[in-house]
Length: 237
Image 1: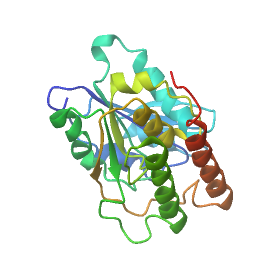
Image 2 (image 1 turned 90 degrees about the horizontal axis):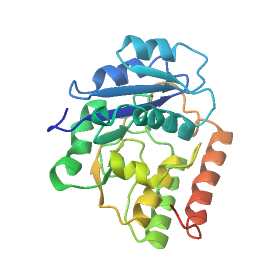
Image 3 (image 1 turned 45 degrees about the vertical axis):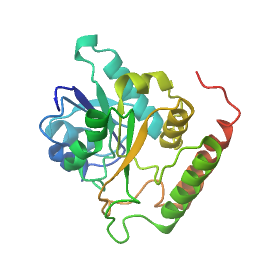
Image 4 (image 1 turned 180 degrees about the horizontal axis):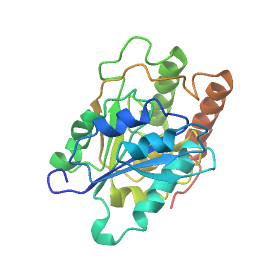
C-alpha cells in the first residue's frame, strides 16, 4: 500500500523478454498487485515476468487496449475488499523509470486528483528516446484535445495513474493504439480533475513495435486522430 491505498500496476507486454523483468523488479515494494499481460508474445516474456514476481495473464488478441482490458477484467474479478484504489499503467520496454511510481500517484493521494499523466514532455528525456514522429504526434494530439475538449495535456504518455472507480466509469473500449488518447478524452469530457507530473524517459530496450516501423507509425497516427475526432460527436456512457 501507498499511504493506505491499494495500488495495482498493469503492464502490457509484447515480446519484451529482455526488459519486462527489469520493469517489474524496479517497481516499489509498496505496490500491491503487479500484473503483466502477455500480449501474444513469441519469446520468453511471460516466463521473465513471472520470475520477477508478477502475476502473468495471457491475452492472445494483439493490441495494447486488449492487454489493458485483460488486466482490468482480472482486477474486477477480485473481491471488492482486495480491489485497488489506484491503478497505474506502465510499458514493459524499460523506457520509463518504474521507481518514479510514487511521484505519479502523489497528486491522487495528496491533492485528490482523479488522473495523472506522467509527462515525458515536461520531464528529462534522453536524447533519441522519442523519435521525431512521436514528438510531433504527441504535440498534435494534445493540442487537438485542448482545442476540442478544453483540457491541457502535454503528452499521451503510457506511464499514468487513475483512481480505480474513475477508470471503471470511463467504460474504456479501444483495443489497440487509441487506448491512451481515449482515456484522456473521456476524462476530459467527464470533467475529471487531471494533472501531469514530469517523468524521466530513456531509450527503450529493443525496437518499438509502433514507431519502430512505418506500418506501426501510420497505424498509430491514424487511430489516435480518428479517436480524437470520433469522440467529438459521441455521447460517452
